Image (cartoon, rainbow, N blue to C red; front, side, top):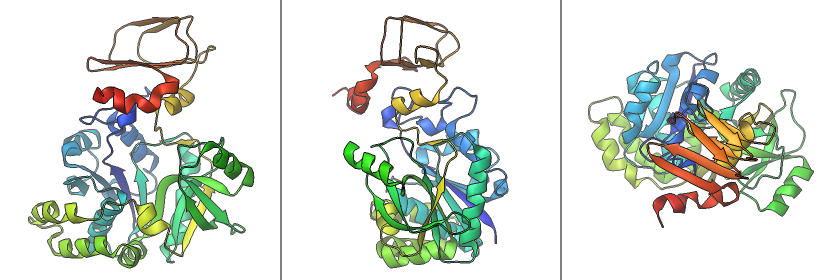
Length: 349
């Protein structure tokens, strides 16, 4: 049974403006200042799981050239361009129908392109355990991150009962992003995990699950199927894909299916969804400041995050708890406590 990796890379990362823009979103940016973009780091941590010929990237048509440039090792025909964004269920369905046509026995990992993993060795071990479980069963395995704080920005997975010898538990329920009090309860309960959006299944399992729980999307894919890998595919995709129901895989399948399991994991994961999360992950000086840039000078500043990779020299004085970010002539100076409004600020509302 062959393993395939599907990387979802269609997001626009609007909470990371001005570093991330709709033209060049965060998954293609060296967010951490390590010389590699988030999607390049994603591919790198899967490199020992399967050969590069078995990677697939689903992205927006307007990002195809960026993907080709950043991931030249991935076969061009494995870069799948969505005509428009329809959330994760249609995105995953399209990739899995394509894989099934060529590799009907495939075992598949689906992952976001813009998360960060610190311990890549432990990550690879967890993926291998999940793939072993799904290879010869109808199980769907999701990775659950052991929570380190009462986080309100993530969805949660509630595990049920005892783990098996591999550490895998049955899933009791998927929970939406909670308020602070609920998040504190989840943390105290001990059987709640952050939903990292990483799913493992074999191709037969996911196509059957979509037929059963999301028949509208499966119907669209069945209509598209005869044209896959032909010169008519792009035209038919453009016609059919926008008719898919706009729904996440969590709503479409995960919350309804029976054989859903969670593998609780600890490998230093973050979905890097905000400037605040980046601030906590970057190295900080003795005053709690984190910066990416070649020549950043901070005087009497504390608890700031500075991302100015393109600037030659940046000098800041007297700031406490601020985001300072510059990209392509666009500058943001904003209190970290107000970062939830960045989307509105950047739209000029």
